[in-house]
Length: 395
Ligand SMILES: Nc1nc2c(ncn2[C@@H]2O[C@H](COP(=O)(O)OP(=O)(O)OP(=O)(O)O)[C@@H](O)[C@H]2O)c(=O)[nH]1
Ligand SMILES: [Mg+2]
Image 1 (tube, helix red, strand yellow):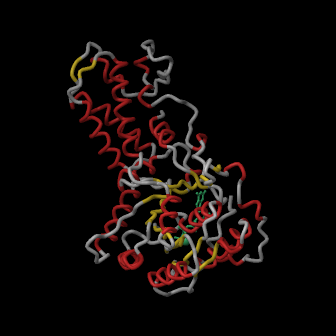
Image 2 (cartoon, rainbow, N blue to C red; image 1 turned 45 degrees about the vertical axis):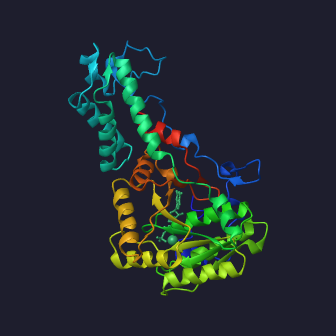
Image 3 (spheres, rainbow, N blue to C red; image 1 turned 120 degrees about the horizontal axis):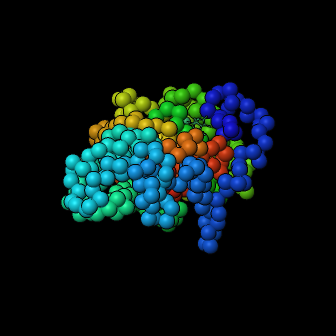
């Protein structure tokens, strides 16, 4: 499991290279080539989000036993689904805020148990409930379906990206302009920025892109060495040694300047992509947040990727809002940037508590571009929206 953990100095010093290179990729998690030769990372495997039961939360109501007109999907767990509350409505009548209050409170609690941030769960439930008020329904099954469908529709809308997620196409656009495509990896400490930057690099190398890794974490000791180890590994795994290089200027220097020099070096040396590793920083640390805003305004990266742990609960909202706020407030620009994509890491450690995926997309309106699912270079996946919704709604 520790294959890619080169974050401590101890690990990174073992540059002698005793790692079996083959252990750094997992053939089972390898992606596939599309018809036009693009290497795409695989979808998140269902097992990483699936529980045992396929009963939606809304169906787990003992009150509905014997009222099973939906092809056997109704649960019989008696685990307290929300439909007992609708018993009085079997005659059919208009749904009101009062009637919906309690079931929606249960839905909120359910989402919180799936690790959705409390504020996000609250807002989504309010929106869904508002959409159902005034609807005339009769029969438990119809009410059940209405609630289930309304929730599914709302979650699909939130989780489905509106902006492009086709990074390879964007890189090729930049190539036409003879400039490197640049991506900055930002986030709080220890979430997996450097590791997942390296996985993204592996994916780019599989697509024959030349990648320069800019070591702009000049703050945490060992950060530069950690990237050196990754570059050495990635070279060993790649067909050509020439396709990946590190740009480093040591510690204590201004990271915005290093990034700028790296991009200039990348442009002068025909690199297709510059991946900018940044220091972890807490969202309330103003000096470090100002430094990040400076890095962004000096270099205008093509993508600002927020790297966040799938383990995070309520904190997700605070982190993202404050990163965006810092980019806005400290940029000194009339058109400030914002986070424009998310990498959700440590997805292999959360079973079906996938709520962070919802909290992060809801808070930013930006897509989850990749999901980190482990500690080899191939443990980078695409999020599958319907799987996440299934996991969220499952009892
Ligand atoms: N299980 C699992 N572990 C991961 C994943 N991504 C990263 N890690 C581990 O998380 C730890 C921190 O990873 P780093 O890449 O150093 O995190 P970072 O955000 O760069 O850390 P700082 O630079 O110190 O802020 C390491 O032990 C990684 O191996 C993942 O997708 N799954
Ligand atoms: Mg790092």
